[in-house]
Amino acid sequence: MAQSATYFGCGSVSAKKLLIEGSGNNSTNSAAQILWVRDGTSGDFLSFDSNEIQAFDSGGSSDETLYLQDFGGDVNIGNGSANGADVYVDADMYVSSEVIITGRLEVRGEKRFVEPHPLDPSKEIVYSSLEGPEVGTYFRGTAHLQDGEAKIELPQHFDFVTEPEGLTVHLTPVGEWLQLYVVQKSTKQIIVREAQGKNGTFDFLIQGIRKGYRDSEVIRDRRVDEN
Image (tube, rainbow, N blue to C red; front, top):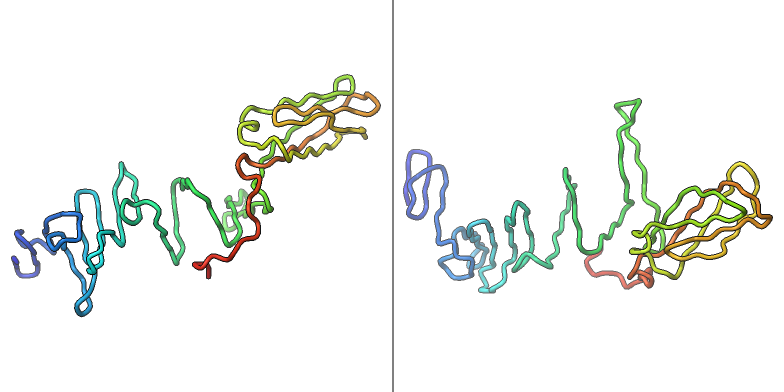
């Protein structure tokens, strides 16, 4: 140990503030115990290896209790290989960039987006997401009848992500009363006709179910980690 008037250095290092030097091995052996904090005879120790910080318990387990890794500018948090571990945050968390989730997002409260009020800087506008028992998709717009018929070509991306079964179509005449009905519906095209063969304009809302989520579970057993 090196010591100056106010600083300490641990390991084979000179005194500069507090500097601890160890082997950098990312394992549970004693050489990796760069920083060991214990209560009585047990405790945890930290290992630092290049761009990784790992925490082990002193029981000799080969798995990390905490694993932080700088991966190309990203930070992986987990256990072992930084995959598949739960992370609990019991406080507000602020993220100023994107949040990318490859699994499922479950929210106990409402889901909202917030915009500043354009006329009053002391206020903001809060909109909340719609809730429902299915994982839905939708496409909406305005169409025009020609000789009493309208063919609505749906975008390819809607077909890519929507189940072929379970489509519903809502029609709203614009400007005059029209007797509208759906002749054919699919994730590629909707055909609408007017009973008297009239021309006109109408709004439409097409709703479907996201592919792979047709049997989405609504009622389930309570999870043990829920408060």
